[in-house]
Image 1 (cartoon, rainbow, N blue to C red):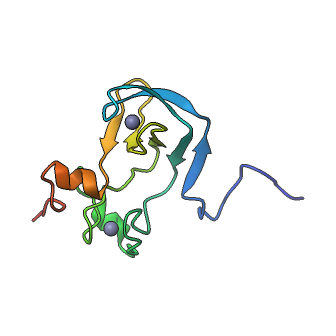
Image 2: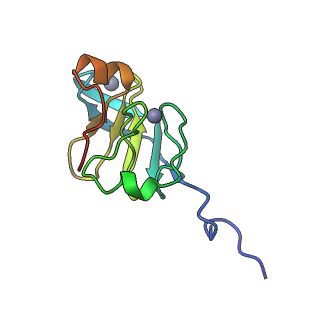
Image 3: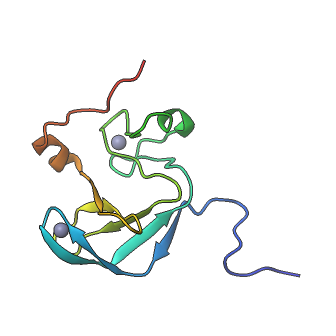
Length: 121
Ligand SMILES: [Zn+2]
Ligand SMILES: [Zn+2]
């Protein structure tokens, strides 16, 4: 007896692709299509910005806004939807009934005057 398809007991699939959707991009300041959308299923184990591995990802997720200790890349939360704006390529968190939240890339963080993750403790 085999189970095909959705069952994934290993948990190695960290993201699930979602269908494209339209959302308001605050960078374009307009409604845009988000062709590339996904739901994060597990904690980020490797930085999506600089590919640094996170052997203790749970530590990073204790703060309100987890970020890579190396490059400051904001980490995606398990259970949340994300997408890339077709217009400008920015990454957003796409909540179901709320405005998309920008997850700024390195260049955008720099422009915003954000130079690193907040230090807890
Ligand atoms: Zn990084
Ligand atoms: Zn955009």
